[in-house]
Image 1 (cartoon, rainbow, N blue to C red):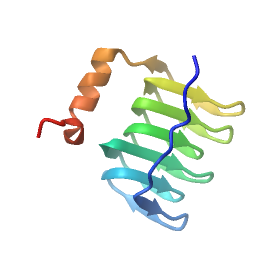
Image 2: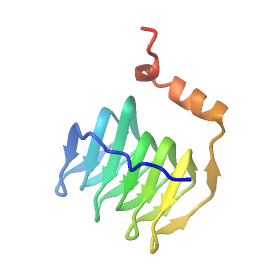
Image 3: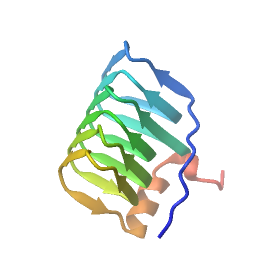
Image 4: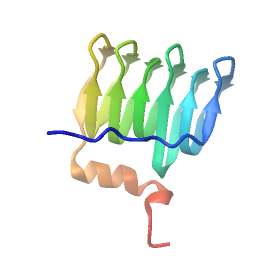
Length: 133
């Protein structure tokens, strides 16, 4: 099965010298080159995370789509698409709809493909996904 590469819209930039401590919630797309110590929730129908090489998240992540190029210590849940680059490290479980792992990536944890019901539940918990409003 072939998938089109997803184009990500970036609304927020966390530069390499920035450190965020505490749980964080943002809407839209985020480019992370710095560090986040806490859980990260990205809301929005097109919520996306792009982690650059050298970036770090120590906490759980919930997002529609993600490209991981740094290190994640925590669980990752994505109800659309995850791409893990070759220099990336993930220490935690990954719940996904579509998962692409490049050669060289280090993943320590369980992989679980989400069912359609789970995807609806996760995406439905996201207020931006509700188009009836």
